[in-house]
Image (cartoon, rainbow, N blue to C red; front, side):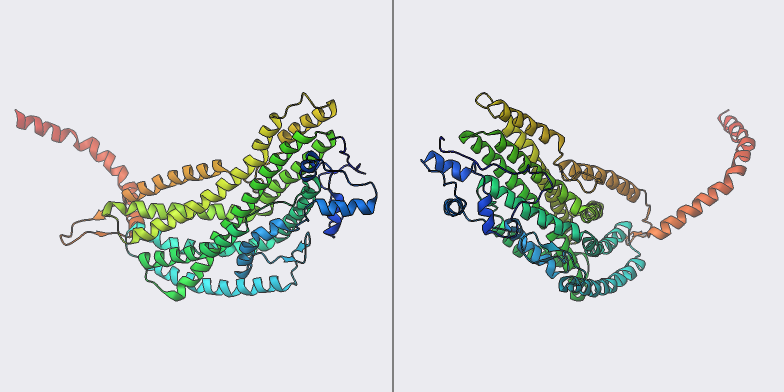
Length: 489
């Protein structure tokens, strides 16, 4: 430790500051802090500090530190990104690290517009057929709900223009991740070791196949299978599923980064504890906390729409399933069960991964700070530790969708609670619908329109007969009573 030394920084690193030399990957090597984990481990192995000469310093640093790997985060989520771009989502142009942007005159955006127009025409044709089916329904109320379910399934087409509106914020989020990786390397001495690419490849391969299978099985069991009408449903179902997978990968990357940052900070304190080092790790944590908040803000309207859509789909599918269980488990219930379980799982993973990322960024990091022994540190280092704790308390690390709501497990519980309330109301409404069972061959349920018209006629007749009924009761009531007494006598 006697040979330890650290280059003095010129200026303090602020939260919105850009890392130096962000355009040249080789220039990153000169900015590595001398208290990084890799150098600290070599100091314990009698590592000799590099000379003060700038040229020799850069050569020795380059030979003793791992090479910087840029765009680690973007490479890990690239498989899901490419799938979304194929179906016309995320028209973001990226020409290098920290150079992602949204351009309306780019080939990617033109392809997205053309794909959206063609898909909208296709979906309009399918929706027109479904509307005709809904108008011609004459069955019970639950069959009308199931028919409306196919109309609701085409609503995710609105996500594409919403993502066009949020594309600039998403591009800025990608650039901020590139800057964070540079700062992480400068402080820790290692590139960000995210190992999520293989998982992203599996998700981008398996999830579309499962999505198509679920759509095909649903159409086989709940309606007549028509390949021409199944195709847009497969595209839109893949859109919602892959957006959920994209959210899952981003939140998983934040969770892993927060865990690695806490572990390296705790490991660095075992080797040496200067106050400046604690301040640098505090700045690094503040950047990660900002990334957590920016994730919710960048995808604000997209996931607000997705949450409402999933809530609506789950409510309708569960109601259709429960309303037909009295007649036994039929073939239509298979499609309803798959739809309900698929969307409940998607909503759960969206809420659970966001909750897990928020806990790792803030709560788990606070636990690491509280376990630090301050007895052997000087007063400056103790002050920085206390400021670090104060920063974790004052800076929220929750994923909030633009102020609408926090994405966590509480959101999932709240949506399920509201869903149960609506299901009870719908089931009570179904029970109150009368059925005509006078036919000996079989009872025919009245339609929803007939039920509403009959109820209106009954209400009008009751309102018209309410006044004379009160007068006749007052005049004719004693007569039957006297007759009953005469008969008894």
